[in-house]
Length: 81
Image 1 (cartoon, one colour):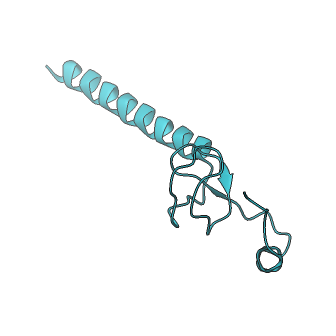
Image 2 (cartoon, one colour):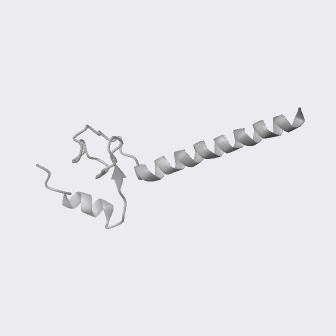
Image 3 (spheres, rainbow, N blue to C red):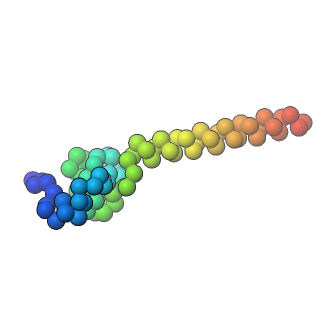
């Protein structure tokens, strides 16, 4: 059973809002957690520093920009010929 953070963990984090997230389900975990308390998957130090939502949103914006650039390029090509 998870007893929560130890005093050493609390001292190390110092009250700062430093969080890590499970790479599988996105739940907030301690950065040195071995297993995710939500999904139970083994983490073993594979935490992500960025919220999964932020990472997914950034990836979607990148894909959208690439698509718009390609559409613009194809439009420009059709105007040449």
